[in-house]
Length: 83
Length: 156
Image 1 (cartoon, rainbow over the protein chains, first blue to last red):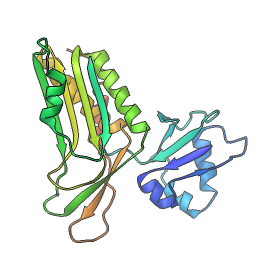
Image 2: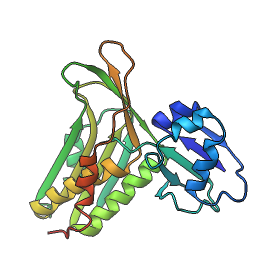
Image 3: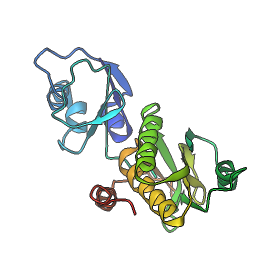
């Protein structure tokens, strides 16, 4: 699946997007965050305050407990500051 | 109903957007326009950089506009949000609502702004006038509170 990062999440991780194949036991958005945090200190830094970073699956807002099954694109980003 | 959502780098013309909603119509009695502008925070900022999630931003604004149409009797609604580097004094966002009566137009415009601030995937980064590294603008709890008060409110 493709993962995209925005704003300071993107800056901390150091890339706009990547394709990953998480292991089968990674079932929810929260699981995915925990798995990403094991991939390096830049990920641990981006997700250091769990609950701050928001997520979207296929361009719709989702909660941490949402399943990532069949997701094509998952995005992580800070609380929004448009308008 | 005329409804338009646009995400663009270029400036917009609020007057032209009002005319686009009202031209040739005789049933609209009220148009409310809200423009959000870039501030310089007392001279500290030289610009704001607006990042957005292309694709989701359009879809989320469409969802917010559909929610407003479901809640109020609107003859038209326009949302335009800019991205890229925006200088102090320039427009960032435009919301235009048109209805038979003013109350629906006022309330729908306020709802659209409250909702888009907490749901539309845009992020502001500061460019500082003194050349120092600018920070990402932090989201305000007030914005969440402003959006959530509509959850229990029935349109008038």
